[in-house]
Length: 89
Image (cartoon, rainbow, N blue to C red):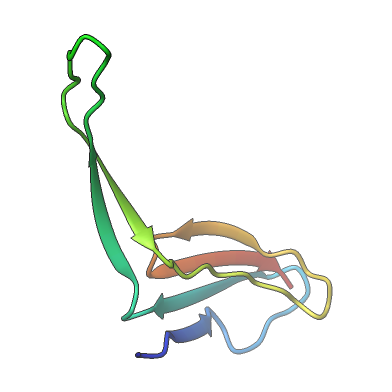
């Protein structure tokens, strides 16, 4: 079983009060699997729907940002591999 990987970086090395901070988190889990489920609904008379396909991710990683200073980080985006958060210094 492979371990998940995470890297995090800020858009600057120092900030002044009021500066916008951007945190980029890149993450992956080699053990996460994608599964496609196909569903066909059939009624009591034998009439069937067209197949409906849904893709699901089993055991996806989630990113949570906490800050000891009480700063609020707002999620800007999350592709499932790269998450971007913003806060004010």
